[in-house]
Amino acid sequence: MPCKSGSYQSAEGQTFCIRCPPHLITTYEGAHKFADCIENCLAGNYYDYNHRRCESCDVGFYQPSRGRTSCFPCPAGTNTLNRGSKSASDCTLTCDDGEEFGPDGHCVRCSKGSYKAAGEMSACVSCPLGFSTPSDGAKDVSECTLLYCPPGKYATASVCQPCGIGFYQNLYNSSYCKPCPQGMTTSKIGASSVEHCYGKFKLHMSMFLHNRVQYVCAWITVLHASRFADA
Image 1 (tube, rainbow, N blue to C red):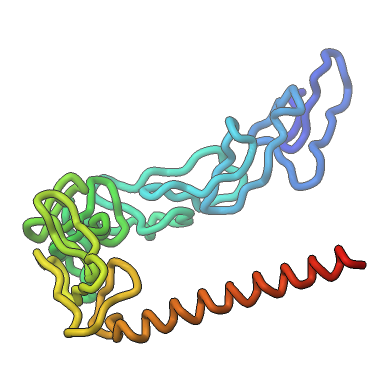
Image 2 (cartoon, helix red, strand yellow; image 1 turned 180 degrees about the vertical axis):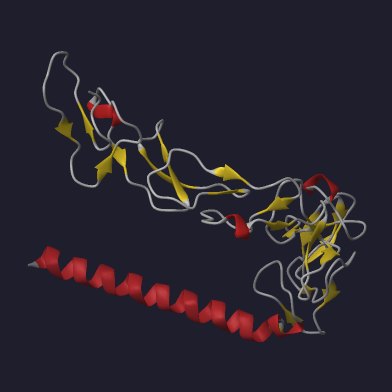
């Protein structure tokens, strides 16, 4: 007689079965080894034998029951929005590549500077920083070919470069940086606003005070060392 679900027996000729540890089950009758005892995964999950743990159903799949080792695929032309779906009702109509669901539930093209590849149900993804797409509706990151430099940088032939000392750029995708007002500069490269410009006197005074503090600290250190030596 085969062992009931939730138990196993690895030896022949036995008259009893061994129950799986608490919270573990078998998915069929007649289990013959301890390895057949698996976690009783929740709905929306399945047991992964390779990793010996419960995993969420992938996007495009669902599982309404506990203790399963696989998930059901959505019908053709539909998909789930997230992992871990528990019902076939989570399978909804999908948008084409390069599209996403708009606020009204209809599919709209990805805006310029974003894309959505095949099989992805998330919202359109932004291009890598510094790049954009030539038009809307991009279907792959490979279409992010247009330089689109953020503020603080300017576009050259192929890359975005940071604005140098004394310059700033507050606009996107500019081919140049703006100089600070006369008598003013920046403390570092990549300034993105004229507010980062300040008088050179302030910069020199800041450096003077910084050096002054370092000098005083060094002098105090030498004085203490001298006193310890005399002692």
